[in-house]
Image 1 (tube, rainbow, N blue to C red):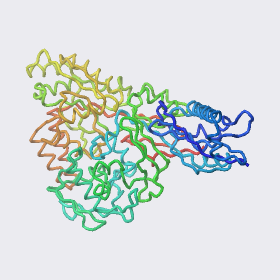
Image 2 (image 1 turned 90 degrees about the vertical axis):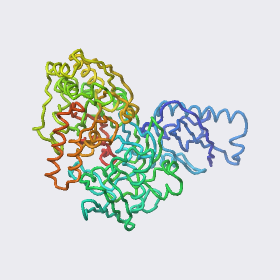
Image 3 (image 1 turned 180 degrees about the vertical axis):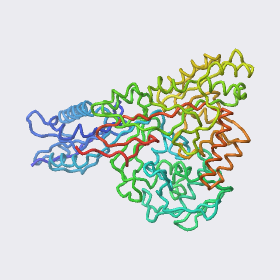
Image 4 (image 1 turned 135 degrees about the vertical axis):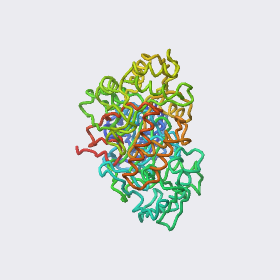
Length: 604
């Protein structure tokens, strides 16, 4: 009889462990390495674990002969220990060769095992379906979910923590998630009935107290970047355990669209542990549980098997969100089967995505624009802003730079979005001659120099677009000094009002109200610090109107003024190109969102 005793060695690896093809290197494949010179089994592998911190933990079993004690077997002399470490090193070498950059979820086993066949059977049972999704230039900066205001990060968090409601791309309407229903007793009151029986990941009940806690924290947390979205809410009340009432200081017809991106966290954990410690647990109600996070590298979630309160059924066992800013690196990772989904595939590179992967695309609702901050003296003159609008050849950007994968904009929103009108004027056609005349009228016949920030990573070919715009502006005498910065720090500078001119995008514009208030209403943010009483008046009125037809008229009134004032140059909306592994079924959507419930493993 052969008995196996456990011995553990831990090694530090340098390769990035966050990859998912664990099935390519199974425990039984390594058993051939662990026989002694007499071809009699002396070692077996219980588990091989690559941790997110970059360590390899190898658990071996030393075969003790009949009558040989565990102490004798493992510590019987220098020869045995040397042999043990040589074998362990051989296993480690094989592990690195066949599992370089593989993430194998932690495995534990019994201290006693009777055969290698059982180890093989257990390994097969533990195989998981893991999807790795590349985040293009954006990342989870902190585990405080309210310290983010980037629409591309919201889908990452949504796996773990959920909103009361959400926008459904398939149904084209707001649908319930944590809420069961909602109503307006009057235009200043919103009542949400919550679903029964929902549990947080620690088993505690989800109640109205959690909603009150979450919305209050959004408003009052000094690190919150989402307070403006519910600034009109002046009272948040738990009527009973399953009823929440929100009161606004004035009617707010578009509130539902903003609540669709406001997530609910666990009040009990916050009260018991404090904000910092509770955030590290990331306790939510979502279809996935938080597992691991390393800033700038990855955010890992695992399947919540008990999830049942919405149609967000988790389709994969584990999801690894990796930060990959460079499109070329992302494409190579996809083709090497190191990631499963990438976004922002450059049009000229789309043809390369073949073999084990494919391109999925959809017209996005993201709005690309050139921002002109009022702190730049020249931008205080409307004629200068209009000149810049006439200088830009939007069709050339869409057709040439983006190779036809974009749609020039002639209004603050696109033709498929709420409130759009073809009648908005002026139409900023490409007219360099007119642009030069406007600059001369403004007092700048020789143009001027301006800094031009280009945040890199999130938007497709944004540097190429910016360079093309720089050339167009140079043609009319405006010398743009292009400066690049990573997406997160660039966005932070824009938010803080420290950038004179920049190219940027506004994502997830379903109802344009929030976006128009955010950028163009006096005092809401520092991104442009634009101010116009007519715009303020129209936006205030549309926000208060619950009549859809009246709201459209008021939105168009505000946008008509904005077209004339030209605080930004609206550029284009783009065709989203996403590379997807053929291991999964996936259909692109206008928000470019990738979730564990719309990424379905294909049968093998």
